[in-house]
Structure formats: structure tokens, C-alpha cells
Length: 219
Length: 219
DNA sequence: AAATATTTTAAGGTTCTATTAAGTTATGTC
DNA sequence: GACATAACTTAATAGAACCTTAAAATATTT
Image: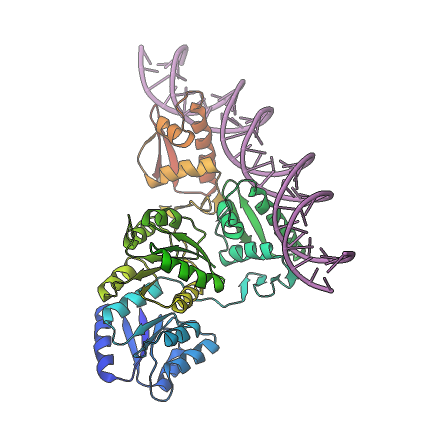
């Protein structure tokens, strides 16, 4: 794992970097906000550890700048301000985690590892796959409107192409139920969605895996 | 978003659930560890919020149990023990986040949203052997579809290559029966599987051990 | 309150898988 | 090599799972 660490206190930085390296985490260090931002846009990092109080640009400024540029690198904010409002501010601005100073490096390492167990972020409202683009906000698939249920099913399928979604899972997730009368719901909606995929002349189709569920496949 | 909240203090739970609902987060509540574990295995939840100190099973117990079962639902641990060691323990056991009590619900909400900005981890369901790869979820062998019974037989063979599987064992395991009329079932399905292995031009083949059973062998 | 859109229900039709059965081929024994 | 037995293959059938459609019930918009 390779991370960027933006921190102006050299003593602290040296100590933390030393510990991280022992845990096999490569660290690039920036000692002010400007350098930090310049280096942040580099996509090689698995995570960015961002102090809030920095010379020139604050951690929040950097966070905002990189998220505005649609860069999804996981960010852990670091601050002596342990106020809940600050944590919330960081997290809603797109940070993935928030650690109060002083912290133990072992906790930072654990949090870095936790972050990197998950795949990187995808873009928000539009989901693209092959020749399909599903817009969650408008509820449209390649500009043709979908109903709420259709969109909910399509979202799950398109986010996991080629992965079978079990019937019970879809029922539970979308209808919040497990009753058998409702088994037919899913069949009806798959039929609707297939019709729409056909009118779109999409390369993709919904495949049934008998006794299991459905998945999205493309030519 | 729908989450599972495992918490034994009813007062706290009521307050938190109320706030979460206002933020459009649906909450199912379990008030002890056993119920919590039972409900955790249901794949409908976008996250599980887990108190550590619980009757019957601790939050750590639940976390371990669900991660052992390869369930990837994001977990936030909740505890009055704010010791760093505990946080590290939770995070290394596969929790995605850790929140110390007391906490503000706004922070919990921010963290839930941060977690759900990331796509869920997929469970790995592929079994590899020589030039074969069996996907249990998709029910495919090297991307060609298998039926339910074919997949069930193949799973047993591929998990125990070079080990003879007795006819009666396969019958009992897959058909749940020992009748002799059904002896032919297995022969029919071995024939189907062999045909598919041939179309795959696999190095592997199913060998018959007369009067005993079958095993998978490879060149 | 009417018009429209969406969801649910229900019924009949279609497709696929598992089972059955019968003929064929392989294996081991004398 | 002849025989008996076990296993293989294939095609036909039955039944379950799934699809489609249209109408009824709800929900939403105008």
C-alpha cells in the first residue's frame, strides 16, 4: 500500500512515517497544503491522510478540491479539533474516515487497512456499463424512463454485471419481504425490463439462472 | 438505505432509530446478540451497527461469525470501551468503522453515508482446479452454464480431485435418497458432465471406478 | 375528482430440468 | 471368447419454474 501523508509537524510526521513503514506502508510526505494538493491528484495512492490545520491550504480545502475534480482516492482526515461538527463536516465533504489527534499509529494503520479492503469509489448518479447508462436521479435508462421498481432492480443488476442476484435477495431488498405470493413480482418486472432493453436495442440482456436468480450479461 | 442495529439499551436504541428514520434510513432492531446474528446473515442490509457489550453474544462474536461465513456487509462497531486496542481489534476483525459511546447520531449518519458511498464487497465463489473454474453463484464451469444438479456434482468432484466419490454418497447428498431406481440418475448426469468437459476441451475428465464411484482426474 | 401512472394479482402459455426407460457399450470372470 | 453385470447414452415424458399479458387495485398527478 502507498499513501500520501499531508502534515506540517515534522516531528509527528517522522514518527508516524517510521511506524507505517514498519507495517509495509509506503509513505510520501507533503508538509504544506499546496504541495499536498499537487500530490493528491496523482492516482497512485491507495489513501490520503490529511491533517486539517496546515499552512497555505487547510485539509478541508484539499479535500474539497480533489473531490471537486472527481478524484475518489480514500481520505482519512486528521485533526486536533475533535468536535463532532468537524467530523461530520469532513465526512460529508467526502472524507472516508476521521481520526482525532492525538492518535495511536496502530489505529491509523488499522483504519487504512479497513479502507483498502473495499474497492475504490465509483461516480455517483450515473452508472455506466457497456452501452447502458442508468441515471438514478432521473430514473432513466439511456434516456427512457423507468418506474421506481424497474430502476431499483436495474441498479442492482448494473452495479454487479455478470453476478447472479438471487430472487429472494431482490425480493427482500426491493419489496422488503420474503413471501411466496410475491415471487411473481420479480418475474413481471424482469419482463418489463427486458422489453425496455429490447426497445433500446442494447447489447445487454437479463439472463435467468433457473432456481437461483438473474444477472446482466452483454454480448 | 436499510440497516440492522444491534443494541440492548432500549432507551438509546429508540432515540437513535428515531433520528435515523428522519434521515431516511430504515432500521431493523435486534436487542440481543443471538437475534443480531440471526438477522445479520440476511443480505438485505446496507450496513450493520453493532454494539460490543450485548447479552448472549458480544458484538465481536457476531462480527467474527458473519465474517467467517464470508458475509461482507459493512459493519460499524459501537462501544463505551474507547480503548485504542479495542478499536484495532474490531477493525482487524473486519469491521469497517468504530464509534465510541457516547456518540452523536449525526456522526453515525455521516459514517453510514460514507460507508455506503462505496460498493459492497463481493464474496468470492470460484473454485479452481487445473484448467477448470467452477463458479457456484453463477453456476458456470469455465463460463458455460450448468444445471443445478450438474453444478452440485461438479462441486463435490472439484473440491476433492482424485478422491473417489461413492455412488451412494452422491445420491444421498444430492438426491437425498438411497433407492436403487435412482442409481441411473448419477449415470445420466455423469454423461452430461462429460459431454460438457469435452466441449471445454478440458485436461480433466471424470473417471469411473467400477462398483465404487467416480473421481476427477487430469492429464 | 378525474386522469394517469405504477404496482399487484391472476391465468395461461412456454421453456427448461429432472426423471424415466430402453437400447448400447464396456468390464471383468470363467 | 462367452457370459453376466455394470455403466453409458439418448430420447421421450412429466412437472416445475419461469414468462407474458391483461385486468384490477393503488398511488400519484393534474
